[in-house]
Length: 412
Ligand SMILES: Cc1cc2nc3c(=O)[nH]c(=O)nc-3n(C[C@H](O)[C@H](O)[C@H](O)COP(=O)(O)OP(=O)(O)OC[C@H]3O[C@@H](n4cnc5c(N)ncnc54)[C@H](O)[C@@H]3O)c2cc1C
Image 1 (cartoon, rainbow, N blue to C red):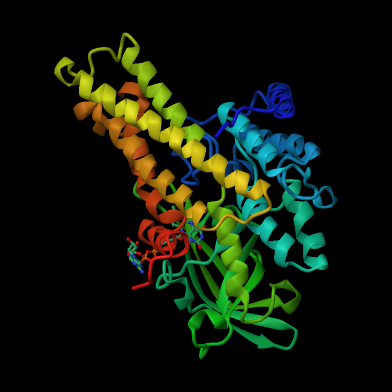
Image 2: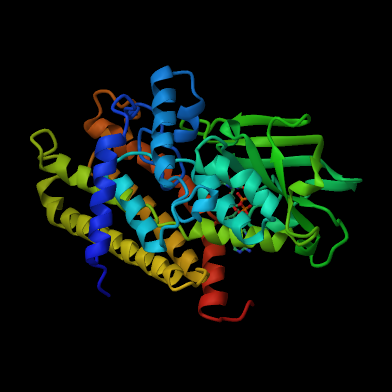
């Protein structure tokens, strides 16, 4: 397939590059000591949701100024219609926009709201819900987190037990969510709750609700991971009252709303550029005076072949992402193709981390960045990559989707 830019696409790419040069706030510098956000498309050194709400005035003002600049163009939610604050870009233009932001190593803004909830509301929301929620996301002023998983319901999401009981014009929620990425920085949550405990099959008794994190009875508790960062939270609901107008879709039909949200999640352009940059940095280091001689000469040829394999796999991932986007451009919703993309990307993330760490021998275990070769980039990446094969759905589950929906194999 030929992915070369058309003259219009090339002009748009130039426009994005010029925009970043002119508008990215110089004072909003990456924090290279901090831990990487685990969201696959976050740029190293930035965590926009945390920066925007953080203590450091320079980062806070930078994050807000960047959001304002993107919002002026409708580029926080580039694929949404202009009436809700988007730019009405095509799937391919949106792809180019993100590719260029990643290449420039500047953060995307409000990803969960713009790329998960927004498209879901555009398909399933009422006009009132769209008018109430979409503009705030597109301006970068209101942030969201996804509350689906629970301690006993991850891959088997339909087993979720957080309960909502209808009481007049409200639902009353009790229960617990876990793994809620960026939950501690979110203004709102979109959650799945059980409204019919006797439903068979179980997924027919689930409803999709929008809940303000500031609502009485919501407790957000950040979870510290093995790196010492807190990328996600557990969230407790105790008698939380939510107006019925904040239900998306019909009662007990929330599963279908959630499935299209997850389809949007897997349809992202992938972390290709981030991997490309990591491999580029590794090769650059191994060629530098400091890094030369790190890989023993007798292992050099085999190691070069390993790097070449990673390079080829990154190109494969790029092609998978372009293919998924070309389906969207043709008006189709990515199905199992998005699972292929997600699975390949997650496992490649782990392979790149291992390839990189291998070059450093024992110093590949140094955690402290100062003084470590290449600032311990691959020691950290190995830890960051552990979550990759879980966070957008576990690899086994992605393989099941590909087997049944893609290859039409029998379920058992
Ligand atoms: C970094 C990170 C961020 C996350 N962010 C969010 C978020 O923002 N919002 C949210 O709602 N959730 C989030 N999650 C949760 C994520 O969706 C779940 O971790 C994932 O769905 C797996 O569920 P689980 O952790 O309960 O593992 P389990 O489902 O208990 O799986 C454990 C193991 O069993 C295997 N397994 C389970 N069922 C099957 C099966 N049928 N066939 C074969 N193997 C199977 C799995 O593949 C896995 O290896 C996040 C997770 C991580 C790690």
